[in-house]
Figure 1 (spheres, each protein chain N blue to C red):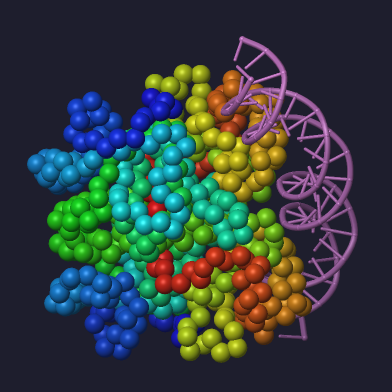
Figure 2 (cartoon, chains in turn orange, cyan, brown, green):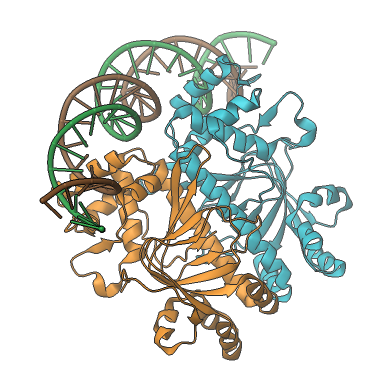
Length: 260
Length: 260
DNA sequence: CGTGATTTTGACGACACTCAAATAAAGTGG
DNA sequence: CCACTTTATTTGAGTGTCGTCAAAATCACG
């Protein structure tokens, strides 16, 4: 249930029972599952987490600004983009439930602007607290490292997408990536559904112009590969055709995102 | 002194005094410099490292194969590429001195093939040994995490490169990236020098065809921006012009690479 | 219902890709 | 060491696709 409703901004404690359900997909959860960390230690870590919410359109961090937190997204979609010095805008990725937005990096200053595309709910740690945790629990460092390597692979997939020559190939790959990140099992009724993203964002993600994106969408629509009940709602009707266009070697599932 | 000569394959101990000079740029060195790790602990880690060499053209790991080591490149250049299911080839990055090629990742199987473009010398740890070190020394995990975030930024820069519309923009950005990674201070006499890379590799890195790359090189050559004493040796003569073409916002210096 | 923003469609041109051939360099064997 | 083959690179001509510019249509919002 990816929420598009509007949360009011508020800080809260992660242990809030009503929020517990979201934690199952969380990175923090993996620590207990995958490593030797004791349950007590995990609870200690979760106790240090707080809850933040961002309403649609709200900026979480501006490119270049210092991010003093480490966020773990639990609901909603975050867009990441970078402004080049000539004013061009590039969408570098998206963060959904289970993904991380981290202020722990070599160079101070966020690499890109992070903005809530839909309403977003996320756990977070203060930077210094998280660094202390990393020092104390080496398993946590390994989990974070593995998550980061997942993101490196995801960025490589993005590179491959951008290397494709043809419009429809790029669009198909983009739509599949978005839909697999966005659609929940209970929603996959009549096809995967892509998150509500503007043409501009798609264009800036695919390295195309908005006009080309629009033309591509019409092509896919008239050929029945996708359907568009409303303008910002895209449903993937014919997955094999899309996979064929995108030439996906494998479904990019189960990879955690890692924003900077 | 980026070596293009040919090392014979051999394993050795990292503590080899003659090799010590290369270690100054190594990630391992940063641990002592940047973190609170004691000198004794660092020596312990270095003691577990071994030395490997790869002659030009040698494959270090094949895409999909399990990599049971963590390499720290000390000399030479490694190319990383991925074969798509339709046979297309994409160069995802390059690793030079100071960079890491890691078998510690979420999914087993290397994401891409790593091949020695020139002769390569690298320290390495066995996977299990390195995991034990990560468990023991949490500072090491933080350093690795920071290195991985550097790579995420670098991959984002690659994405931006591929998003550029014009041929010369892509080529300029590619040449600058390569040259900054390759040129040593003592070599920067009459201009930065790019590593000896085939047109095919450049094309597959930039998302272009070899013909387009060739045409672009001639354009840059006749306009005096670069010079080519031999075919595989490119010298960047007019850096401001290249920066102007590439529209680099900042020099991508001091970022460690992280291959998977 | 009117205003503004977003998206769609159209016409045209530029740029890079495709196909093809020529040139240059690197290996190979006598 | 030189002819020969093989590979890599360069150059050329023609085509197709996407970008650019412009206008129309659709949607969101007050």
